[in-house]
Length: 73
Image (cartoon, rainbow, N blue to C red; front, top):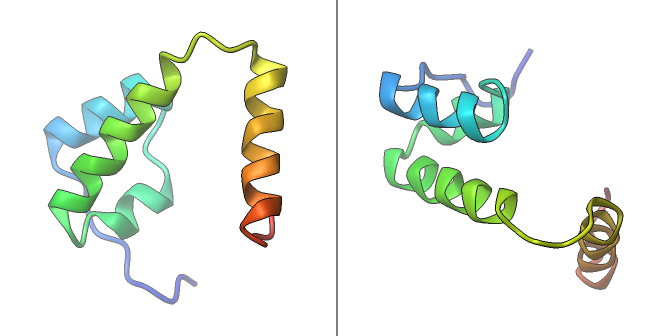
């Protein structure tokens, strides 16, 4: 059970999430509590999707950023 209640995602945002990520994630449903935050996250997802980096190098960049910021990944 989620600690934060999941919200329904508006149709427009649902379409964006499906286009950018492939499906609506529970993360999208949590962030939907703030439509502005969800819009920003979807815009970021779209920008990252368009990066011209090799997939392996992009994943390495994500891992390094998580390590530098002491995040569990």
